[in-house]
Image 1 (cartoon, helix red, strand yellow):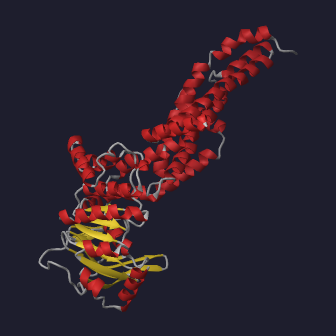
Image 2: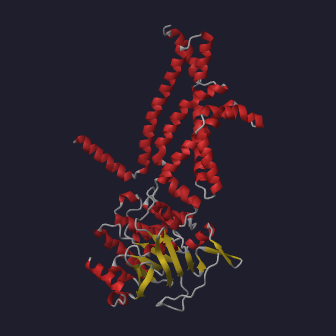
Image 3: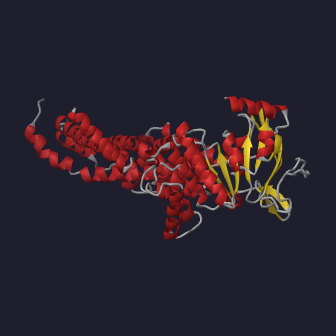
Length: 274
Length: 237
C-alpha cells in the first residue's frame, strides 16, 4: 500500500514552527456509507498546544479526534504521532498496516474523555482511576493509589473514592473520567463534546476542571466543543470545520471577533443567538 | 395394579443411592459447558474468518442433533477411530459439549448488551485485548446472565437420564433395573419423577436467590442501604 506524499497546504498559523508537531494529519479522508465526513483534512498539533474544534454537527470534528484515539481508521491520508505513522508500522523502511502491538505503543501518547463518560460501572471511582495505571503502566498499587487520590482531589472528588459511578451526578462522572484519563499522563488529551450529555447546571463544574487542567499541564489538548466561551478561554487556536474540511482557523480572537468566511459568520451568529 | 407402599419404601434407597452420581455428572458437565462455552464464544468472534465459520458450523451442528445421538457417537463410534473413554467421562463430555453451544450464546447475549462506549474506554485506557475482556467486558456481561446459566444447569440436570443408554447407573437406570426384575414399574418410575421434582424445585429457588445476590453484588453498597431503607419505608406505609 503506497501512501501519497503530500505537502501541507494549510494556511498554517501553526504555532512554534520550530517545534515538531506532536500529532499531524495529512490529507485525511473518511466516508461512512454515502456520507463523506472528512474530505481531506490537514492539521498539525504542537506539543502542549490547546486546540478547539468547532463547527456544525456532522462537520467531522469528532471523527478527527476519534481517529487519533484509534477508534476510527482513515480511508486515506496519514496521521502521525511524534512523527511516527499511527495506522502503519515501518518494516524495513516500508509501511505496513499497523498491528495491535503498534497501536498499543502509539496509544500510550493519547488519552480521551468521552461525551458519555464511559466509566466502568462495576468498579469504584478509585479503581476506575487506578486500574489502567496498575495494569497498563505497571505502577505499584501504592503509587497508582497515590496518583489517583491526588488527581481525584484535584477534580474535587476526594470524598467519593469508594462510590460507584451510578451514585454520581453526570458532572461528577465526567470529572472522574477526566481524572482517569489524566493519570495515564498522555501527551495529547482529546475531549469529545464532554459537556453535551450534561444537565445545563452541571456544565460549569466540568469546564472549570478542564480550564484548570489546561493552565497547569503541558499536555496538548484537542477539544471538540459547542461551548464557544469555553473555546475562547482555553484554546490557543480555534479551528472551524465545515462539511468535512477546515474552513477557517486562527487565534480565538481572530475566529470569534473577526471571522473571515461567510460560513463561520453564519455559524457563530446562529450560536450566539441560540 | 395398585400402589404398593412397602415395595416403594424397599426400593427407594436403591434409587436414591444414585443421587451423588447424578449430581457429580450434572456439575461436571455444567463445568465443561461453562468453560467450553467461553472458548466457543471467543473462537466465534475471532477475526480469523475460517475459524469463526468453523465454530459457527460446529455450534449449529451440535444444536441440531439430539444429545442421545451425540452420546452414542462419543461412546460407541469414537472407539472405532481409536478414542475410547469410560462411560462417565463420555456422559460428562457429551452433555458438557452439547450445552456449551447454548451457553456460548448466553455469553454472547450478555456481551452484546455491553455499550460500545465500554470497549472504546478500554481502548482509550490502552488495555490489552485480554485485559479488556477480563477486566472490563466479562465482569459486566456475566452477572446479568447468571439466571439464564442457572436455567441451563436445571435443564442439563433433567437431561441426565439419557446416560442410562450407555449404562450409567443414574436414577432411571436403577428404576429400569428394578422394574425389569420385579415387573413393577409404577413405583420405581414414580420415585424417579419425584426425585427430579424434589431436586429441581429447590434448586430453582436457590438460583433465584443467587440471582438476587448477584444483582446485589453488582449494586453498590450505599445503594443497597438506600434501597433497603426505601423498602422498609414503603412497608411501614
